[in-house]
Every structure is written in C-alpha cells, then in structure tokens.
Image 1 (cartoon, rainbow, N blue to C red):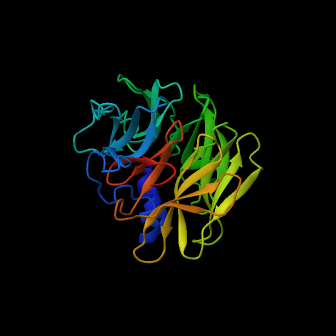
Image 2 (image 1 turned 120 degrees about the vertical axis):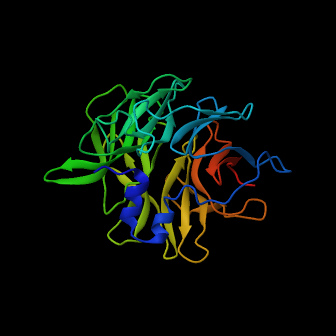
Length: 323
C-alpha cells in the first residue's frame, strides 16, 4: 500500500517530536494583512509554498487542493479539484506544489487522481498554472512519488520515492528524472529515513537535503552533486538539543541555505536558521518574538532572494534578512 508523505513520515519517526517535523499545520496563526512595520505579510491559506518565477504568486496546498495565492491583489484561486469519478468519501489529495521555471506548470504529488486504477498511488502530476487538465508525470506502481522540485533550468525533476527497488529490497530515495519523461536516476539512498525535502542549488549542480546517520538524532544538512553522486558534503549537523527538520531552501545567489530546526527541549519550537552553502556555523533567523511568534515551517526564498515565504498558520512573507 502506498502512503502519502505525511503518513510515511509519521510512521517512520515513531516519536511525537520527530512527527512534529512533518506537521505543516501546527504553526501558530498570523493576522491577515500586514503588520504596522509592513514587513510581515499574510498571503493566504495553506503550506508548502512555491513561488512563481516572476515573484507575484505563491502556490500552496490546503485541504488536499493546490491553491494559487496572489501577492498583487490578494486573491486565492483553487487550481486543482477532486477527480470527476472519485467517490466523495474516498481518500485523495493533491499536495507539495512546485512551480516550473518558465511559469507554465505546477508540479505536484497527487493520490488517486485516476481512481480506481491507482487507488493507493501517489504519483507526480503537472497542472497548467492558468488552469486546465492535469497531466501525469510518473506512473510507478511500486512506489509513491512525492516532494517534486523542478531544476532551475526546467530540464529535470527531483522527487522523493518511498518504495524504489534496489536489489532485493525497496528503499526510500531521492531520484531525478527528465522533465519531459524518461527513466529516473537515484541521487541519494535513504539511511533510516533520512532523505527528506530537497532544494536545488541555483546553478542546478547540487541538491541539499536533510540526512540521518546511524543514530535517531544523528542528523545532517547535506548537499550532493547531481552529476557525480559520490561527491557529497555535510553543511551542518544537529546538536544534542536540536533536530534538523526536512525543509530547506537555497538562496537565489547560491550563498545560503535556510532550514527548519526543531528544539528537543520544551516548548519544542520550530525555528528558521541559515547556514553558508559551503558549510559553517548556523545563524538564527526567525526564532519567534512578540511581533512574530513561533513556530515556522516550509521556508522558500523569493526569486530575487529578498523575502522568505514561511508556513505560519497559512503562508506569510517576511524579509529574508530577518526583522
């Protein structure tokens, strides 16, 4: 049986702390509009933010639908709707949108879109950004494809595969495939549930992702070469009091990676940190304050690098340099 990324993550972690890394709906609410300093903007509902290439819209998902949130007129448009033939009570979802670099497509992971042929499938689909009919990207009866990300040049798609055949076993992997179809290539094999949401470098040569060592709390933020998967380096690692959650985003200038860190001490806050892409000491960016309380998820740099979209009781946009 195939499971959604949210379900598999919860099954893997086995503890409430680890499961909270995947809880995109747990963040505190933010009032609508902008605050008095005009630096915090509530854009609309949802989580898993993906910017349009021109920076005027954000795709999110909420209630199993993909939404388009406008930063120009504050409109909210539902892009995807349930398949016509699916029973109202049947489990289905569209999630984890990724906007194509040319702005024409929204890539997403969809479950039961061609029910009943793929009742438990979660495959990759793409939808015209202006509306239309979805097109299937993958059709893998052995696994579940989630967390898709276009490469910066639009030629490749990186995604997370939950049941990829390797020898006599099935493993979780990060894979890449040609955007117009073709055989996938494994980029990274899961180590005890390590390969979470990834982010391409702006030049398309590297992919950053959270990785796990032998111990449950032995965690790294790692980058791996796309052309030579044997080349990898650890950017930073979790401390004894923290965990690196799955979300990370590479800045458009290629210099910085922002990521989510979970405290293992009460009140178990999820905060936003940055680290040089070449490696170094992480620096706090959004830790929570009276102006912007904890907690945060899903950082995503705007195309010009000036802002971050965060999940915080919906999608908010804040300065990438902090408040």
